[in-house]
Image 1: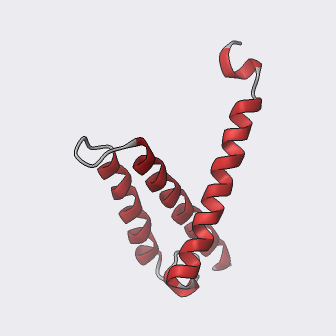
Image 2: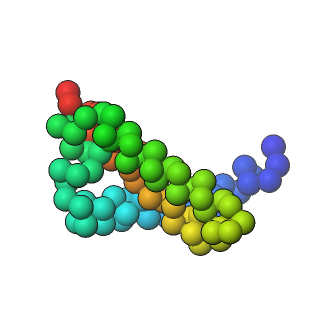
Length: 96
């Protein structure tokens, strides 16, 4: 094997950093919108939760365009999308 697999340390650091940013974004979303308005809310319909996730994914697509795209914006939107995906996982699990 070659490349990053010979020295996974830097990649593991990036993974750790990304997961920390996703967690921070998730807590920020709860603080901003309230738990009830996030996909973590087990009472919220799965369709409503998916709409939130899809909206964030759409922002990723927009960040990839030449008109609105930048690496910083793309990373921000990817982190927000990942946070809402985690929120939806939690919401589905809380349903029992």
